Length: 231
Image 1: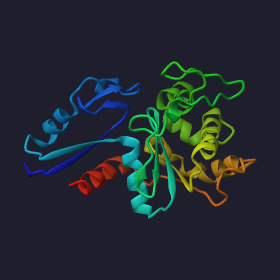
Image 2 (image 1 turned 90 degrees about the vertical axis):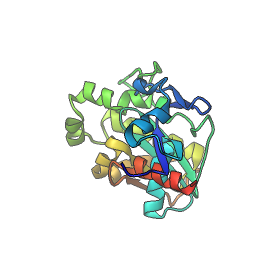
Image 3 (image 1 turned 180 degrees about the vertical axis):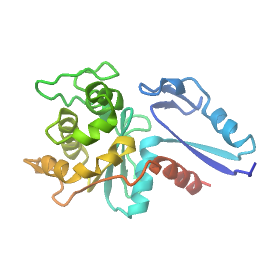
């Protein structure tokens, strides 16, 4: 097995950095209570000199920013089993609570006439509309969702509302949707951008950009970049 000096592991949820364990992961509960270093050791051996454990949303945002040479504040919304977010200011992550800029997946974006309860028990949460379990429940499969979804569907309306909230709080220069769902919504980017811009608060930056990720490996590449940077 090839010698590995530094490894980066991106993980979701709330982490205890001293114990190096995930303490809460609503959407991937199997990760909770496991020493994360052991996962790396099983995969790459015990000879790794240093393991960097990183937030998955921050890792994803880092790779998107580097690969696209983005400047200013970037909000990266990861859409997958759950919904996560990274906020990066010229390469520096913004942390409000733990290793997170806030829990966008649990923000109440209730759509009138289509109430939901999110996986964390919160009414109207974004994850309750556009997380993978919600989409499978409402569409039968994510593939059907991608074929049928328009900006008039509740899942996309909820995403639009969440992005508008982000403009009021973070004032980003760029917003990117990534993750297994986000990268596959590229065909809706123009319509989502138009919906967000409609009567958007004047606090928002006028020249903000909106795009979708390029592939499913932004998080892994971002973790590798960050781990190598600290080497």
